[in-house]
Amino acid sequence: MPQTYDHPGERAASDPIRLLAIRDTPLSVDEVLSAAGDSAAGGTALFVGTVRDHDGGTGVTGLSYSSHPTAEAELRRVAEKVAADFPVRALAAVHRVGDLSIGDLAVVVAVSCAHRAEAFEACRRLIDDLKHQVPIWKHQTFTDGTDEWVGA
Image (cartoon, rainbow, N blue to C red; front, side, top):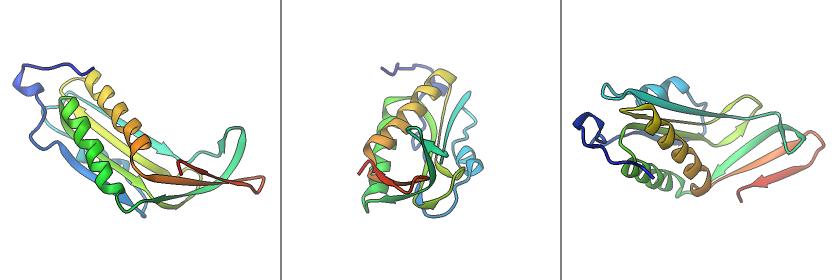
């Protein structure tokens, strides 16, 4: 459960959501980290999700993400909830759609807060809620010729 903070520098920024996007172009860690920067923040937590070469013991050759037309609005709702529940100074989140290769960036999120503990907590909530609530689906192709939809 998030704590309340009484020091002015620890209060959430008036509009901490700096970058939200679902894109069909390569993602940039630097862009997200820069967007989540804030001079009043003492800690910034960053999560980078990449396409791995296996899942459940089976080799993966690639995957494709697709999203519902409401995905960006749902991403905003998730971000607003995180910003309301934690003393967020700045927040940024981008997710990729389309065909991705092994090693490509699939999602990048970052949260800045006055202190590291709440930055870690808020960042974890942001990525967890994004993965569970934003309508983005993954179609994996395996080395054995099979495929699988995840989250659909």
